[in-house]
Amino acid sequence: MVALHRQVLESRPDSFRSWFQQAEELKCQGFLIEALHSFDRALQYYQHDYYSWYYRGQILEEINSFLEAINSYKKACEIKSNNYWAWYNQGCIWQEKIENYQESIVCFFNALKNKPEDYWSIYHLAKAYYAQKKYLLSLNYLQQALKIRPHDYWSYYWQGVCQQKLHQWQNARYSYQKALEIKPSDYWTLKQLATLAEIQCLYQDAIAFYSQLEEMGEDTEDIYYKLAQYHQILGNKSQALHYQQLITTKSC
Image 1 (cartoon, rainbow, N blue to C red):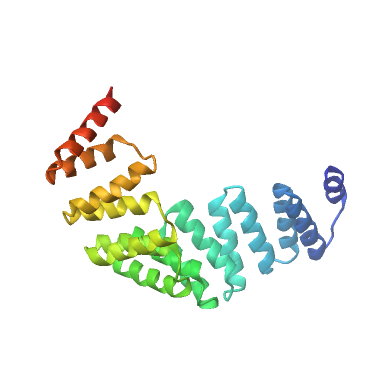
Image 2 (image 1 turned 90 degrees about the horizontal axis):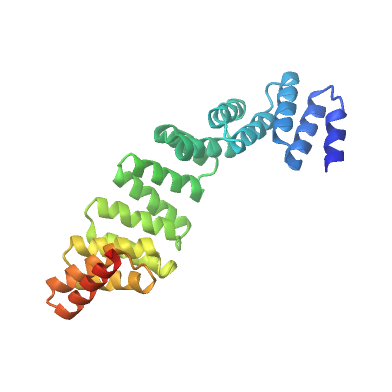
């Protein structure tokens, strides 16, 4: 590997194609900074190459130079606006690394123009609108995502969260139950179902969900407190006392 790396660096490319090929070889070998330099040299010969800007963006993203990566992806999109990947990758950086959701929305819309049934762009649009507290719009895209992937845990889970924010209690419960069918004994879904039961004052249901969490080993003081509280409300004195004692033991 080292010998091959030295051989590549000792070559003296003198054309766009030579620099581009060297950049690809270095990138494949994991020599990212050297590959970045080679892509830059290739672009000195031909500034309008989509792939040089795109691969350059990938490298910059991998080394955590996110704003530079965005600029490289933007260049790629200026050259070839009807592409999917440069728009999609750019959108992911805006959303996940910089938390600029409006910019990410623009990118994912452009990605969808070139790949209309893409689950990931649709799902990311749902998450971007959720982050902006536009729950109805988020719900719309989650429902579109579920048409593409009918058994997707994450779409059902976030659909439930949106419905809960919109006070659509029964719909939220249905969504969480569907998520739980796909991913049984999931901590976060059980926690959401327990919270939903609390909101609706369905204390027996809340006890059932918190008991499942306890059986999974989630023996936190908060769970014991909830179980003690709801058993007390329902008049289950011995169970309430049992959990109160567990709280005392855990606090010592």
